[in-house]
Length: 257
Image 1 (cartoon, helix red, strand yellow):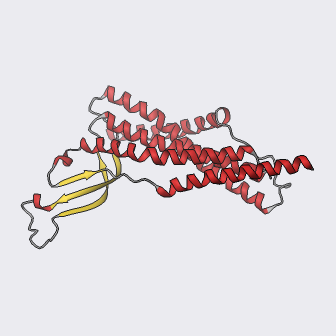
Image 2 (tube, rainbow, N blue to C red):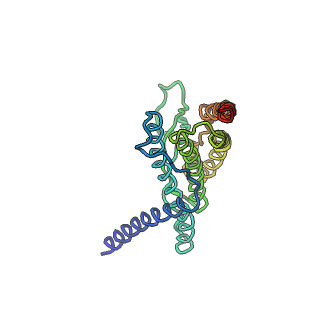
C-alpha cells in the first residue's frame, strides 16, 4: 500500500510538472520573449534558400522551447528542494552526477601487491554520481544547470530570429548584425567565465564527499576552456562586422534605386 501511494504521488508529480511546463511555456513565449515571426507564406516563398531557412527556423524553435521548458522546471525545483529540506532536514536533494579526474595511489593500499608496476600513481577520468551532503551542494549544481540552459536558450533565440529574417528575404539588416554580436558575446563570456566557476563549485562538492579524504584516491574537478567555442565567438564578431558593411551597401543601393 505504501509503495502504491509513493508511485501515485510520483505519477501525479510528473504529470503536474509537464502541465506546468507547457502552460508556462505558452505564457512566457506569448508575453515575455521577443520572437520575430515569418511574414512570407509558403505559397509566396518559392526560393529554396528561403524555404531551407524557414525549416532551420522551425528546428531552432523546437530546441529553444525544450531549453525554455527545462528552465521553467528548474526554477521551482530550486525552491521546492529548499521547502523539502525545511520539512525534512535529512533531505539534501537528489543525486549529483558529473565528470571528474582522479588519482589512485596504489602504494596507499597495503593489501595490494604492486611490485610489478613501475608507476604506482594512476591518473584517469570517470563519471561519478554522489549523494549531496548538504543543501548548498545540490542547489549549486542546480544553478550550474540553470545558467547553462539560460545561455543556450538565449543563443538559440537570437539564432532563430536571424533565420526568420533570412526566410523573409531580409538577411541584410541591422537586427541580424545585433543578433550575431549578441550570440558572440554570450558564447565568449560563458566559455571564459563558466569553466573556473564550475571548477570551484565542483571542488566544494567533492570536498564534501568522505571518500575524497582517503589517502589512496583523490578526486579533482576538471577545468576545460572550450577554445573552439571561444574561437567561434570571435569569428561571429568578425562576421557581424562584415554583415554590417553589407547592410550599409544594401541600404545605399535601396536609396539609390
